[in-house]
Length: 164
Image (tube, rainbow, N blue to C red; front, side, top):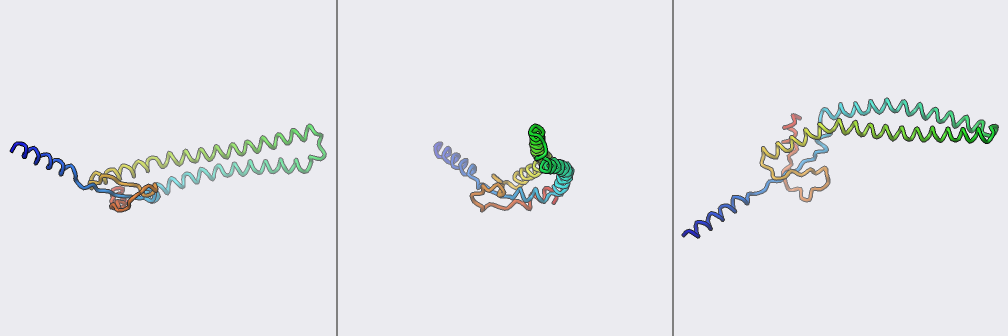
């Protein structure tokens, strides 16, 4: 009898531990794109890029002017002056390329810093929805790693949590 009670206890423990797992999926990327603050962040980045664009155009115009002068007068200059002008043009071109790369990095950093709070907000909402509705896992289908799409779409639940 004692062994029977132990066996019943083990079976009951196993059956309680074997609860059905609940899976959900969400397209977090689409959710991020629909956040109201995403529009403001994009406008901020575009405004910053526009400011840099004016400087790039100015530098390109300077380079074109230098090159045009070089082409027009190169045949009349002594070799030393021609070599100096070629070096100046190459340095100006290299400076322009470096400036463009620096701008791209700066804009990428800006975008990352503006998106980080939004990503955290969405992640927190997904986690809260998962806990509130008993999901074992919620997969992000925008990451391209969804192996099985049979779970529940939790997008509307997360949108509600975010107030969208």
